[in-house]
Length: 252
Image 1 (tube, rainbow, N blue to C red):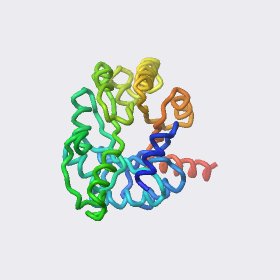
Image 2: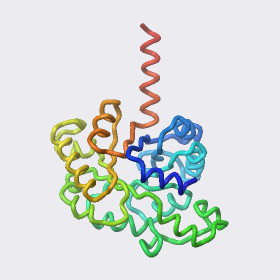
Image 3: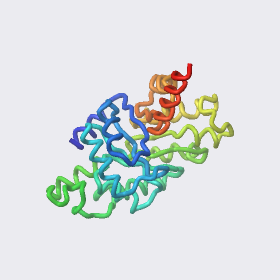
Image 4: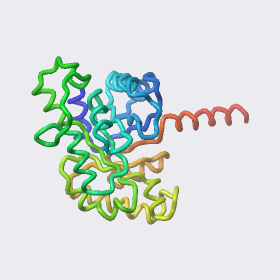
């Protein structure tokens, strides 16, 4: 299932998912069954434990969607453990240099692509029941997503995009807006201009581009602008908005 989902993801023109901070596998399963292409399970800002993260991954696959883990930082243990427990891919924040991207590939891929720590007694290898050759080959097809979030990343974008093995370049609009002096104004002309330039550069390199949106209008705008990996809001935010809407309707 994992292999076929990854192939489908890479071939599809538009993938829509959401960030999830939940510790409850039921919510991940619901998101998957609702039809999201992927879920981003969050170690950077989430509170889920490593042990429970495995159950969130199981729930995603049960609903036939891709579990992507956003790790907290570029770190061998963080990246290796996320892939060991069966994540279909990793999303790595705060990439600002070419060297960052090189390090991420090194830590997330086995030889001959990278130098990831080897252990086949893990969930991703069916706890050693998967043939070794098959495991290493499949593992090297895992999705690698890098997040560009600041002005420094913009200055080094051409060098970063030279690194082979990156599947998706994710633009963090809020951090980008802050670095451009317009914090929170993600549709400011400065922000939109820089993001569109990144989209065009990625197209030339045949790389998928992603971003975060939290409105229907934002999703349509960036899909029409060539962004193929859309992270639509956050589970807790969607739940909060719906709760507020219900109360407003009840008090009319």
